[in-house]
Length: 155
Image (cartoon, rainbow, N blue to C red; front, side):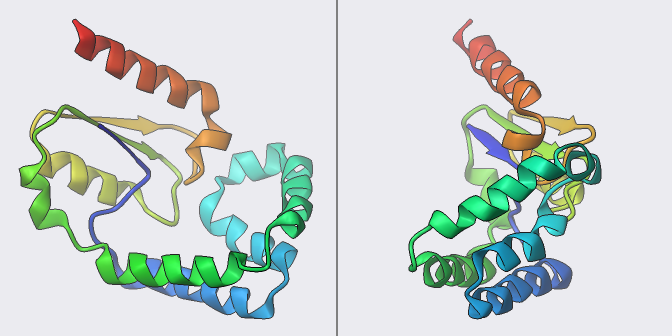
């Protein structure tokens, strides 16, 4: 199993951040929403390097269906209510790789470390110069880590 930029519990700042996203949803402007949440999920160096790409991504948000905001608000509510499973992690028995971006402001490193410490047979990987959106920010590093981890298990 691979767990990427995740949490098994929340804190007040994390909940406040996603609740702010819900308020942004109420504006019903997808570009405003994108820029309103971007600084909490993208790393600073990624934003500086790929700002033009992010602007394109922000505009592309307008292509999402009208139900996007209501669905996202439901997802946020579910996250806030159900992200309380640290005590259950001892029940995970499969080999696990926990990956976290060093600069993840939404779900800081300490939460990935909590997950890694509570799962037996777990490896932890901190990806430097990376925020919450590892798949965009450090694509090659993420793919390499995943492929390496799963190939190692085949031995």
